[in-house]
Image (cartoon, rainbow, N blue to C red):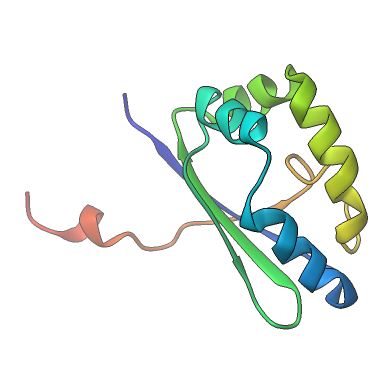
Length: 112
């Protein structure tokens, strides 16, 4: 099945960057498993020193991945704890992010 590449942006409050980083150094094992089980593949977060957070993952369906996580108990706990870290968040972090538009992908332009 084909995957969609999803890239998103959030803004972490600068004063909370050390704690945000600490919490992501080893996320809860049940959260990691839930992400994997619901299609959040090759998931990475990148953080700039001013708090700009860029996330990337691959999934067969963004809507299904978000719905799958919404149905888990661990996600409710995680999102409640993480929401305090973000500036101008519209909803939970896993649904309130600003999705970026992909404009280039090398493999799409290479001869097959």
